[in-house]
Image 1 (cartoon, rainbow over the protein chains, first blue to last red):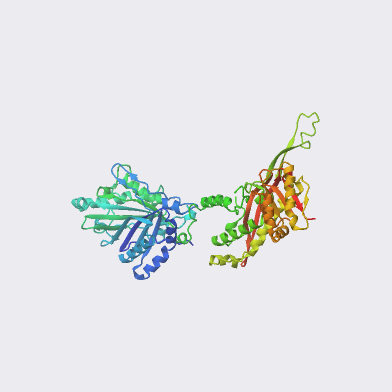
Image 2: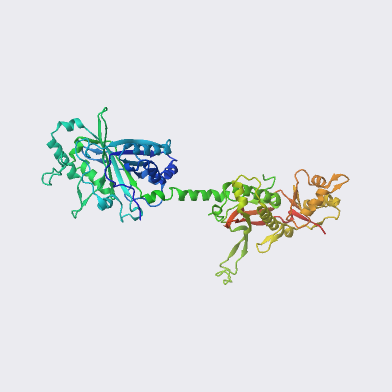
Length: 338
Length: 276
């Protein structure tokens, strides 16, 4: 039985998002660390078990090829920039994602600190964002976020890879994006307008009936149905973040999916529009400043990773060298020849 | 490709280095032919034979022999196959692991014994040849009459001088090297003539470019060879290598291996000195 990383654990009070790029040559250190992800979570989390520290680690496409040989996850690729007429979902670097969740931020922080202590000098930090719970699961726009997350066994189905990619069954794909909100402009429109942008009522979080929901609302564009009318969902665990002093108000989007096409389709709907041009109105008040895609291996794969990349070529090369060197190399002993 | 499978042996890099040093030292000490004949190669593990440059008529080749009108001629190119020598030996894992523990005096006696054996095998091929491999050794190939060594070692310099004369008369110039069997070498090294060492005497006879070599693979007597080059050629396919066979919890089975063949290009370039 493959055991997945705790991707669908549900929203928590605190989260820390750490994105790293791995320097050349540090791949073995990262391989070592990946094997210790669980034990590190136990070590840190056991100091206060009630606060339920959970760590999910994701591996970016470029790093995957540097670290592992053999088959690769079908949906793993560098995050593809999505460019619409007015909005752009930018792509930014990232080799490793640590998604740390707990009731209290200090556990997340301690875990991140331990990771950096292990990898310091061999990785570069692309982004570190500390997310917090904002009242009753609201984002900084004032709306409840994540209401439509699937729960229970359907959460597992949506969040993890199934039989379509048997080598990676139980794994997952995660896309993260940082959005910054223009709260001044947002605050300048009426609550009724805001509700039509989101597609839900603000105070009591009730989704508009389909006939009243504008087609360019956030909820409408992020509802993905296939030809048979089945809805496809992803698991989000967005967190607000910000700096009151600097006027930074943001939402850290994180979406897990077994089928990364679903998440990408949602983003295309938002940024390009569905139909094209009918873009998500939330983007008039929010700007994506980062975007990365990672594969989330199963716990079993973290414990027993695929063979290192380059092993086969290295073996061939060394065999070539050794074939020359493996004899004792005595050759001629004639003095005139020496 | 690598057929030695050394990476499968439970031997640390340090132990391999130590073992190989010992093997090389022992082999070089005992081998004599490589000091006097031309060594060509190693050509690589894939080489199986060395072309002689000669042809022989191929009347037995289908399509040729049955045409008496001579419209089709077949000739077969001659090649001499390489002979592969392999000497298995067994080392204790304790000796191997001692090296990784820092021991500088591991017990490599099995390595030394095997290295000596393969050195003797190589020299034996050069001196005595092998009918199966189509190799004429120096002794068998020489066209010069052998010269008897006198019973008294004091007469050895004189015998060497006569052998050198024989080579000169056969049109073979110097320099000349003398290979002495273990017994002859010991006799020469021990003996003095009125206080002057026989070994020094022989060296004077050989001249400044000549050398005396200890050749324990020679069963008896001595060989005087011209070392100008081009007369004797030792072809190596695979130079002496150490390979891995198997291991148990206490021992590791390894082997020495080399492949070679030997050509005498000038039959008059050597003289055998025999002990009657």
